[in-house]
Image (cartoon, rainbow, N blue to C red; front, side, top):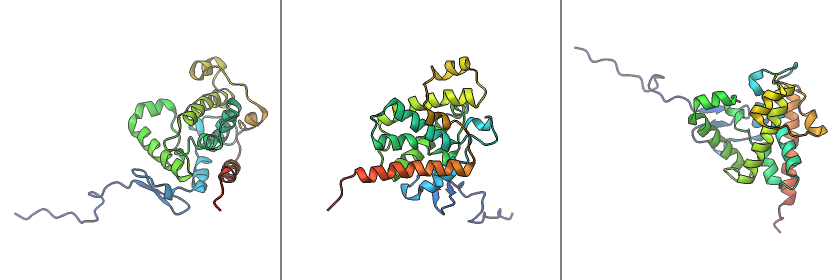
Length: 218
């Protein structure tokens, strides 16, 4: 009786699933073991500007992107804690940076998926933090501030863009935080390229402040 044919060594049937994503910069980010060396801010901005918050269920001709949400959260964080340091503010701006790779899933779906999603998200976020010289994992101060500002942002996004009633939003996100003019402007969805530029500009401004605040080596 003839032996069954042997699988070709390059057979897709036996090969491990691809666990990396190619970025437009040419970088390949391994989701199982992300390296900070494979992370570029241009890739992050490009991706976040194209990822829709609320699964795209928002008003207006443009998506409300994670890039805009990140700017809003950082602006609210600054209003909540004006004394926050530059590294804390940068960490808050980048708190959802992992979503440039894995997308933005609504909280109920994250709960259904479980720990696999959160572990991947944590690995990528920590690599992002290391890439830009920030504590990894995020410091407790930055984490707590990001969570508080994120909930405040979510309330206003929910009621202004996603069709939630104020009572429904209060039940889920708590009492609303009063927003200033700059934050209110960030609740107006903008074109993708505008969101990308705004995010890059804010990152660059914070990064420059961080660089200038560091002691210079003689």
